[in-house]
Image (cartoon, rainbow, N blue to C red; front, side, top):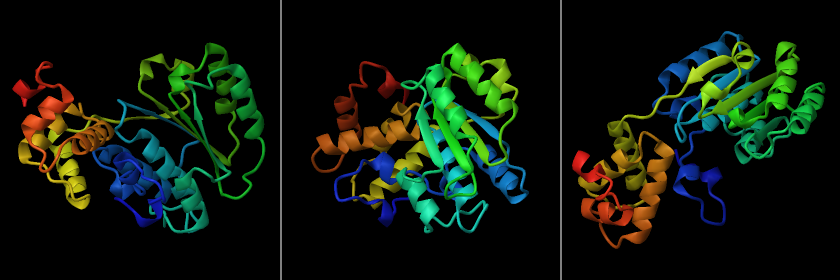
Length: 260
């Protein structure tokens, strides 16, 4: 999943280099991927989605892939080309009709009012305007109420994709107007398989025990596993062993080693 067009002049962390670009590259969430691909194929894309689940399991990545699928020059298609202008700009975060908002730092009613004003206008370049709201549970009550008005009567050219690690904090009035997909933690064996693939492609040398321990320490989050992999490879010299991982990450005291 590491791609030539994703390689900038300065160093980019593993988690970004190996971020999935297409639905086929998403791991551990087949129920989400299959449903979304079928909806696009059948022309039954909803106006609002809620992606919930723990951190690092693909919520934002899938949101960006869905944005590409809707705006690809070959689309709407379950298989965005990842080569056309819209696909490349969405991947780089520069496409004018895909707006990402972090609700943790933009949680007030004024930000949502600005969003509501913006949705009135037709897309400038793409087929759809896609609003990706991360950590949506952080919005204030007033902001949720303002967002609700837009979700009740959404323009046909707008798709909202909201992501959260705490679905229980989303008001029922919002939930009832979204298609809700729950993203699951990845099993340790799946995380291990992916970390081994990444390590091989990146020229990293880890023994089986090191990979086992990293997979368990990830807690089902592939992104956390990738960050841990990068950390231990940077700190270790030569082949990375299980003992080095335990020592470098301080996992002996936490009981992870005994459970592995």
